[in-house]
Image (cartoon, rainbow, N blue to C red; front, side):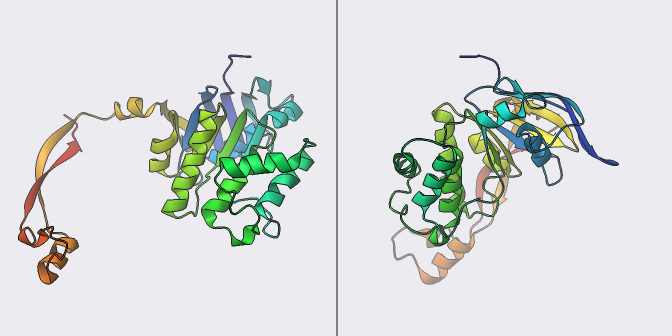
Length: 274
């Protein structure tokens, strides 16, 4: 088994006429890790993913996935990857199980039913597997979409803003699915504009801004870039909960009314520049 990085990008550039989307991007993703590419809309995240998944050709630089050059051997790259876009690519007319079996048949795999059942169980969708996908919640659709991407056991998976438009509960469901992927040895490169998502999931985080990687490291390394925090005291104003219990009384016996309306002091940290 090769020990080379799962993804290697060196000096990749991409422009659309006068619009320079990528301006010499460099990054390395180790095998079995979760790498988060963080950036605002228009930073170039999706463009880079499209280049790495052979859907777009770079203007300059080199990139390899699973040790294979994306420009010279795109067919081999496609065999090693799976791509999940910003919107779940599932057939709402079919059931969850039928969606999985369809992909397994398209990949010419044996026993599509067994493959579907294993993935439904792995992503906690067994009870809903026989239902039409049109009845699924957003989080269930996204988990099914990721499950479909794993058919054939690709060593590298790209997740392009996997939780866009999901509610908080559904986002957590997807986070757990992504953590499970890495735990099983799959390399995950995900793009996101949610800071908490990168913080929760990633082994390493790169910030892409105006077509360039401006910082790249572990969460601890990125935090170390900021000045040390100092402790100060701030006055805490009563919350609406405090006011509510002061007015109606605390039937639960928590004695919240005794503190309502009174300012309390709490610790707060802030960064200083010296």
